[in-house]
Image (tube, rainbow, N blue to C red; front, side, top):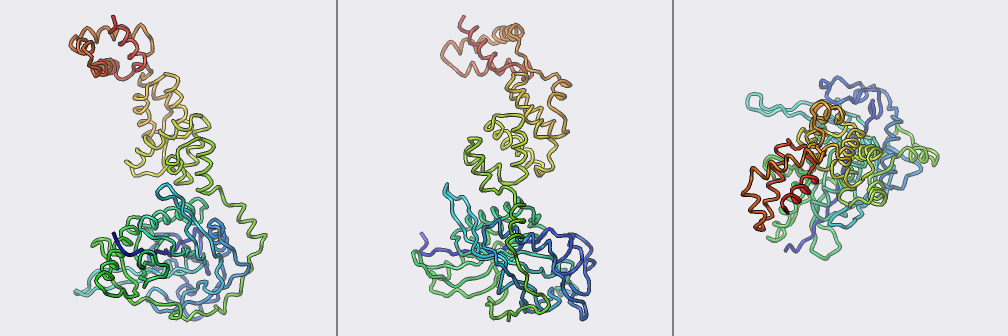
Length: 481
């Protein structure tokens, strides 16, 4: 058992879903040809003009801070964070240091059947930098190019408190945060496109102590798996150093996905290194109570509230509620299907097994699903009514998934209606018993599996269309005689 405890805090940068940049009218669309969505201002050129704050970006940031239970500052300011890097054309980043938008919030996660609150230190607005594109070799010399399309795209940075102690807690926090942001519609949170990026601050302390150790900052984690593995490796690295009597160096480190290790990039900078000062071109902005109330009224039911309601109103197990509220769209799909089919648990089972199974197989999202919620509800009704068997229903559902057709149309076209006529089934049962005297003898010898075999033979002969319950009853009745 380790004698150290990890202390983990996350810094999450989220690109906001605005059409234009934070201080100018350039497009924020992803994937454009490099350096085509730029202007003199976001390129930091002399005489490029003064910044004009994007109101929608502030509204989205305020929505984020409110959804994360933050205390909202009545007045916010913007500041300059000074440092040099090739993708920062102005030589500084416009951010919020002295008077950020939101503070002292929280988010809860469920871990080991317990609820844990993770503090949010602050939520603030800032502009993104450009993007370095590493190109390989020119005459055996590596080189890079800079794409400034991303420069000045509006971000919110969400800084957690150091309340996490395991890679799993960090992963769950990030997943919950992403889920919340998607629910409120402020970002598409596509980690593969860089619209949600996560850095982790990690330190170790002796188990049972309250102080903080020397921390390292871990960058370049662009998936939940990378966050988990990167933090896990860094904890192992620091543990090894301390156990050998060494000292951890405060560094910014890079997570290498291919090798599965962290690598030193530079010494860790402190706040004083950035020489923050108020931006003289951006006046303070008041965040009125009325504005807060307006934004708060636009926030939909959030994951925690919906999770609790699904358990209370639909009597679902916590696992089902957790899966169904993992995305706003999936929760909406479930409730729309429930309008047609009022059996919450049975519907939940079908969505979690059959629907999500096919979506995962085809690498699709619920919003791309061709099966309408009411059509899934009607399919389950047909099972309950005895029109089709559960086995046939799965075949029908696969065609519904592929084509978007209604279950009734597929059943009619393929003649898949369940056989529930006693006379028809009795004749087939008698044929199966006559053809399998050995299984009949096995049944009478106390071998219960023989009954399952005989049922299977009836289902095979009827291509799965026989009513399974009736088949079982008829077989038992005939075997008694």
